[in-house]
Image (cartoon, rainbow, N blue to C red; front, top):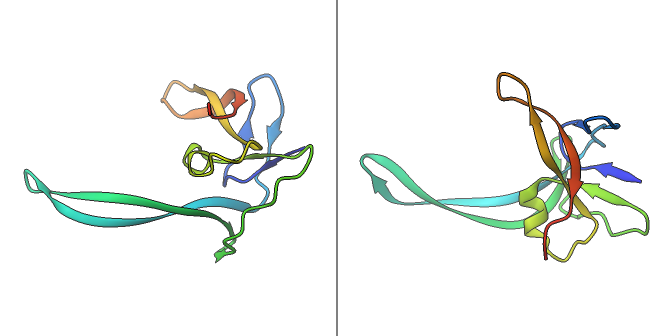
Amino acid sequence: MIVNLTPHSISIVGGPEIPPSGKIVRVGSTIQRIGEVEGIPLTCTTYGKPGVEIGNRWDGELPEPQPGVWYVVSALAAQACPDRKDFLIPNETVRNEKGQIIGCKSLAVLAR
């Protein structure tokens, strides 16, 4: 079973479409201004603990790993949770003539 924890449908080229589950894994962040470069603000972003957003409510708790269940998350969320072997990310993206992503050829695990 694949559960999509992104806000978008995941279209697998030549395969199924995985609809969003209504729960989104988000990674919190803090932005700090550290200076400027040629008049442009220069900031540093520190990423925090991932959690789940349901509608406009922050739940904070990631789903527990379950046998036979895979979770599609963003690459940032997967990188923030290197211990989660059940997190998948869209891979081999396919773009239309305008450069917009219209699907992917596979799902991937991050190299550990």
